[in-house]
Length: 460
Image (cartoon, rainbow, N blue to C red; front, side, top):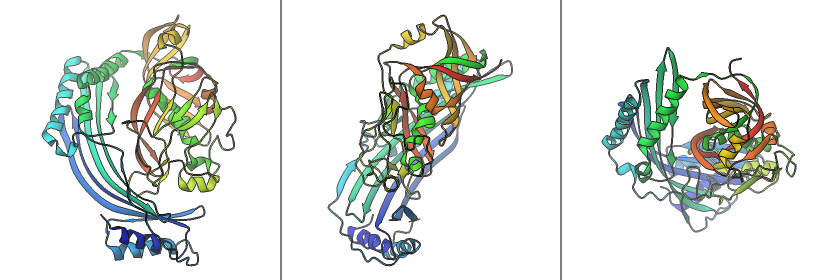
């Protein structure tokens, strides 16, 4: 993409009018995608993008510029403009890049780019046919397929020069059921860190049946009662509550500027002693994993909470400057148009010792939130509101009738303290996490857990 001599000159230009650190992030990406309604393709796309982001830091100030024009004279000009915007005297620093360190965050066995759109379209069509044959209550399906491959170069004024190759694929399927004027949905959205071999490994029929079954079950369910109940959160995507209500507040993005409910609480108890929470970008092959972060820092396993005690944060370079703490490999960005910041990767509450059946049997009355949906969170306070896609009443220690329309309302710190049972069935689900550095792939996960009390919104 660019030779090392050009990169060195761009990095020096970025320091020419001030700054104590400069960085270039060069990206060449190829992608394709399809979306369908009732199996009929509505949109198809392929794309190629090439660009560079140039960032300059001075203390805790940061400037990012980016361009699709990678001619050297253009890059030097915009790098100098970025440096000038910091309003400092010239520093005339020299930059010598070290030898290349090559990384492979993904090693696709079968590049999705070599698979025809026809084959990908048939995947969506056949999924729709299966869902529609599952039940006459299924009145509509929506589905999509996407893949992305990236070649990345990251270099900086400290002499780091790394390359990385990344590939991801994802399948999304939603079934809509209609009964007596009521509509309910069920969906699945598995994603993989790799090539088309991930799609070929999926049990598509079972996933489609799962989405259809959820929709059909919920469309006939009675409204959920409201009140304060014990709530058992199912494994996998149940971890979205920790991700949203607590995880973002453990990123240096908010901690470093005092906008986190956990600022200043390192080493203190913030959760039940049953809670161990981890963010780990080093897990092999997982959706949120990577071999090098987007600031050329080697990632590491972040133990956030150990036996209820706050033990760590996810820290990027700029956040580390604000916190006077080294970066720990949590810097991520959607692409070259975004400045990196601290982000989650594979974030989860770790497994405990209870079985899911034992947790249910020891709950005389409550709500079983089997599948979570979307929600909203205030990172400064941890206040959240989450919709439950699939919920059931728990009566006399057994899962009873399904209920629809349940929402969970509370504060992340309070929920952490109220976790009184942790299962042994840890599982991950995939999502896209949005923040100031764009949308990045992130796993959420947890075993089955019980919260002694949550406010449940529903119908009295």
